[in-house]
Image 1: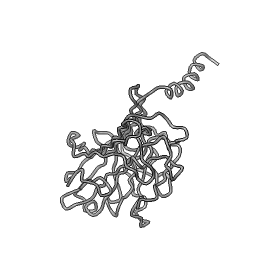
Image 2: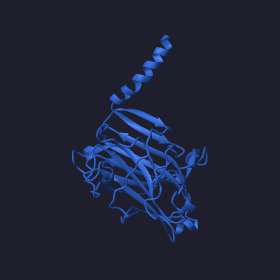
Image 3: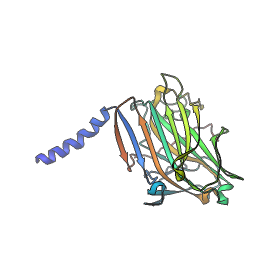
Image 4: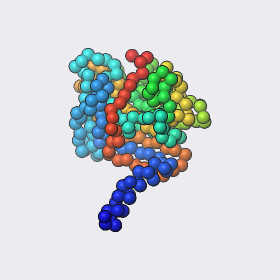
Length: 285
């Protein structure tokens, strides 16, 4: 074996080990909105998507998602989802992080009559280092929050779902809107602080509205700060009727997991997902 090949082999084998041993900020970025694993929440099958290299916010690309169960009569838990990395394995947890942020840009056009008559829920959550008390699955849902985008007489309204306060009322200009959730850990078993924000990317990233809350006991155990373990998934859970004519354009799917200090590891435009996995908690309709 030549010296060059030996060096290549050494780098290939040792680099992942070196990275795993470092305390790092982990960044996932998918500017065209397609991590490569958008899946049907009913079957876990990969969904066909349409992608464009241009036309998204800032001139980047975008991806069009289809509501996969529109013809099957389902009203809830029916939209596509994507993991930022492989489904978490609490029996061998990764490092706990101080903060995690996830975001997705969605193109909204309030002028469409179909959007005025329906809605969509944008669901985001993070990973956990422990299992839920009831299930042998990661304790994700105590730190889960959702944006509900619904049609109103004046445009589109966004609420903290279900039954939460309004984040933005009557969005009446079409364009790209960024939906961001940020989870910040406190000390030990204290609740995780959650901030939800909407920015209008078509208006210079202007803040449309934001709201703060804390991780709650969602029937599967309280999500504690010491269990915050990196990025999780984005899921369009409730996608009703003809909202968006059963199509949504998405872009800039990002996640940043930040430890207390450390260097940056950026994973740009390639999905690490090897298995499509999702289990919905049983007490949500």
